[in-house]
Image (cartoon, rainbow, N blue to C red; front, side):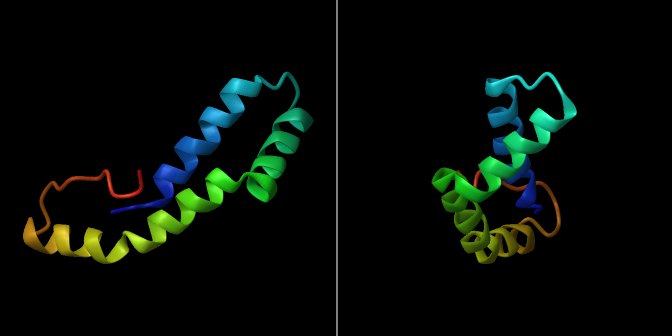
Length: 72
């Protein structure tokens, strides 16, 4: 139910690919990705758009487990 997890996973993969060696490099990578990566912006929009489907899935599952691939 927490769509931000998909965004964090995307940011984590970006950081892993660029392999920063200092704290400042990490900050720069995160800032650059957050500000300039169109794929991230699409992912965020998809996650926002998926909220009604997520709520429906939770209600249908009566609060139990549900499919979480809404933001892909």
